[in-house]
Image (cartoon, rainbow, N blue to C red; front, side, top):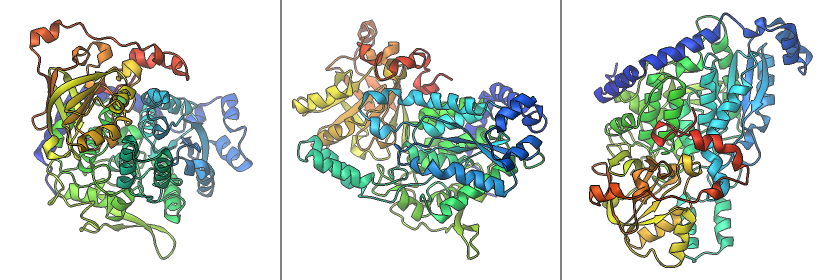
Length: 605
């Protein structure tokens, strides 16, 4: 048996000790909620009649008897998200599979699912992070009827999977499986798309040319193929044991995709049955599973959004994950995958090169992953080193993954990584704490020292660029973008502009209390700065011309101003009235009043 890396052991034990009381309390609550047997048997006749009133005769009879599993379907389907459009037919597929198995399944509820790709740079993006908490609440409401013995969670993108999982953990006594839909086929390369975006930012491409490039990239149903938060979600659900092995990146509308969905129905029914197979979500997501998620994030160069989401997910399970844990593991977990924006490939090429099975096999063989975890597959992580396929009899089967990568430009073994660390680093200094993703930042840009130019809106950066005011070295300080200010939107509109300036030879960086997610790219970006400007954090005292030093080599983030003078400054304020009204945003005052800091998950839970 492979010996675990000592840092992995140390971080896990530290997390377990720190979480001891809160984890015991969580497990006590969900174990008490389990009770004895199927909850439907304890419903009144009126309650139960309401629960099966709209069912067909066969389902109604099974629900009346109350002895066979009834599965909840929580669906994030809509037509607007390409990743979620395939879910339109999943409820009927799941219900039919359940009937064939002698059990029942019901659509328990739908959850909102907004597309960050559509709302980028728009007012709607200010609701994006809050939508995670809203999804968690909607999931819990959907499960609140005491009708269910297990659940299937249908979601893919950005805040949706974290929200579903937080909601699932609030009903952690129920077994559950996350059911992906798969990525769209590869369109034009992400590098081609990026070049057209930069050309448009410089006025060298027309809007029609830009739209053509975008439409050739995002061109059909399925998950976007770059490695942002949506695909990082899928990696996490698999490496944390909530997907069936190898299911994360199987294409939509294929026989294998449907076979995996059918198997998920059978599997969650087994997990919900009384007896030794019973395994609820709250017992799968323990300290080891959370650490495995952090390791997967580092090994693949995943989305920085998960320094918010994984913290919030862990807290929902009574586990006190901290940024320090990410930092400690980053130093020993190698980068094994290069998927755009960290490389040229997309997730389809990653999957074809060996994908999750190869990645997990390599991490296990080098003592960099907890093998002894609970999973929905009924094995430890060793069961996730196999690749699913349809065998000669038309049945779903798994074959051990090759020990050799199918494409070393995309996926490598742990003995020959792309880099020795995971590419995510914490920054500390007199400006507070921040996160930087360095997996795609050139080595000569890991330290930037330049004058600050302060903005309170990302659109002001673009306007300054168009006026020709940014052709120099500088650190763009974009503040009042935190959860308590305007909901902590992603700031991807900045990427083409800052990339153009960097390509011109200027030494630039971004410093913000907002988010950049998994697509931050080659420009050094200190993000999630906490305390945020709205909470009078140090970022609120930066002035134009102050020298800011971002040092990703030594993990420092400082403004080079005399300490006494800096502390004496009155914090800047921003007119946030535009973020209080319109577009439904008045409904989200609770989030902005009660949201925690970035390092605590930036949510209301």
